[in-house]
Length: 110
Image (cartoon, rainbow, N blue to C red):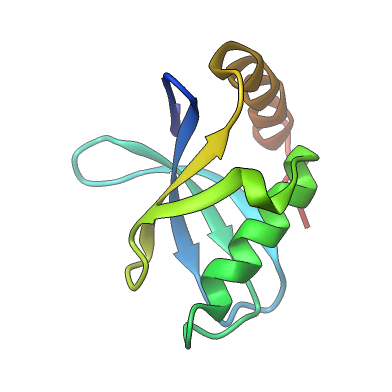
């Protein structure tokens, strides 16, 4: 799973591709260490935080969460990022598991 429950929410690992043809979540990938991450792409360039802001906007919309509940906590200038989604970790984990099942079934966010 690309997310981990913490006391005040969920941490989500993301591999972001900026300057893509369209904003979307392409699925789940594993890095060389076998750690899972969401594979996401945004059209915004990686300049002055534009790609990071586009990622947060896209995921907030997909998860029906306020943008203010999502915070980039690691990877500000790296393709590998860690986001924090604030809220009840059990409820969020259940919702993200359902959402991820849709991604696995080919319903990737486009």
